[in-house]
Image 1: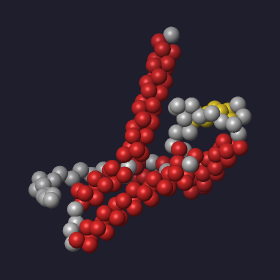
Image 2 (image 1 turned 90 degrees about the horizontal axis):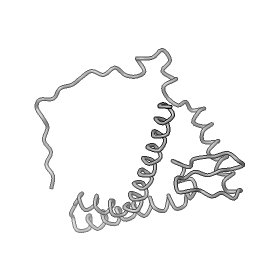
Image 3 (image 1 turned 45 degrees about the vertical axis):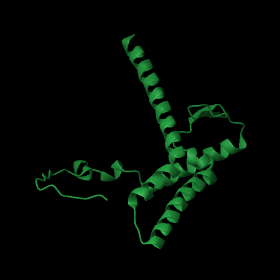
Image 4 (image 1 turned 60 degrees about the vertical axis):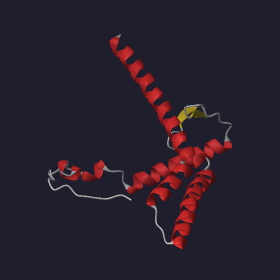
Length: 151
């Protein structure tokens, strides 16, 4: 079991909220109309991907009607059923264990955490691979930029 204790020597530092630092706080955050417009654009893009012959490369880049796109962050939309199934499977595993623990009158949060962690290993690996590809892409981009700047 874990034990929790609190530090006695806490130092609190005042932080100025971002909204107090600008004249128009609405410009700091995405507005509802912008969010709706972005969602609409994503759906239109995904519909065009569904109806076209599209090859998505290892970086998630693809072309539709001569325009290049990056699918980074849109993975869940390409196969929403699979994404939902993964979430539900992980949830079901945890709920089953929680049910069993209640039946025997025990509660072990470490076991619950480990079951969830194990249930999501594949997603964690996929995310790590995407992060590595992102890092490689960023490094390549920065390298090209520094070469251009030095010319």
